[in-house]
Image 1 (cartoon, rainbow, N blue to C red):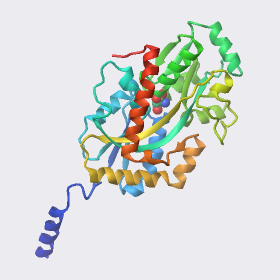
Image 2 (cartoon, rainbow, N blue to C red):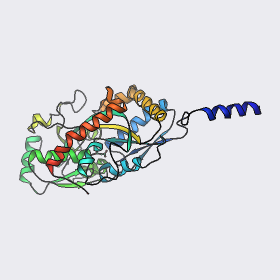
Image 3 (cartoon, protein in one colour):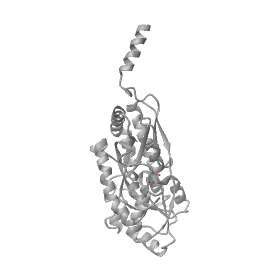
Image 4 (cartoon, helix red, strand yellow):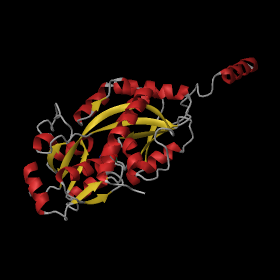
Length: 322
Ligand code: ASP
């Protein structure tokens, strides 16, 4: 008995560190409030990754400063695989939007892989006196200087979309920042703010229930199925060439062991093939990524390309935050 125990202990000592990973619950930090679109993607993904990871995945919402607070928390976390980050296009906008960032986007993270791509929709408070985009455009013109545009802070997807929208309609609006678009949506429903851009993962149910007005999908193509398929694109509505798609991806702190990264990536790939996850994503207008960007190297290349593509657009808008 004693000999067996000693042998087992000896064998364990020979195993490479982290071979047993995960041995306790894994936390996924969402850099926005609970109940919003990024949070919804994270919770569905965590559910689908639970079996392939053979671990409990806990969501921790660290909202604020356009997603940079949560990202920074993960950049500084122990690189042991027990703290991961589910972020979005904000990874690629923050380096151009902030004069100083407390982390380096391309150096302080291990890139795990991409999850999905999600269109945004332009929506308004239910009492907006406009039935389509042409009427909304007239109302915006007539109310110049008085329009409140909600977003999830500088660097968020709703911020970027709102920025591009203001440029397109040549109008400055008062932006009202929240820690995520879940609380922004509450204020939109209540009429405290006028308009907002947000991912379909958050807006589909509210549009379907008639609780907000929807004017356009902000990507180049209409949704191919589901309740928002009849919604025109921004381009069709008169915002020529407007095309913005949000993506979500997983990250770990720099220095996380390769064995751990491989395990999480394998679980991510399994989750993306999970039928329930696929069904749920499709219903919310999200398209699961199936190409090489599901892997670390291609995803990192993609983020670099996004930084290079979005940087000049943000520069042209002349928006910076400290
Ligand atoms: N949709 C938000 C954004 O604008 C974030 C969120 O609450 O998930 O980035």
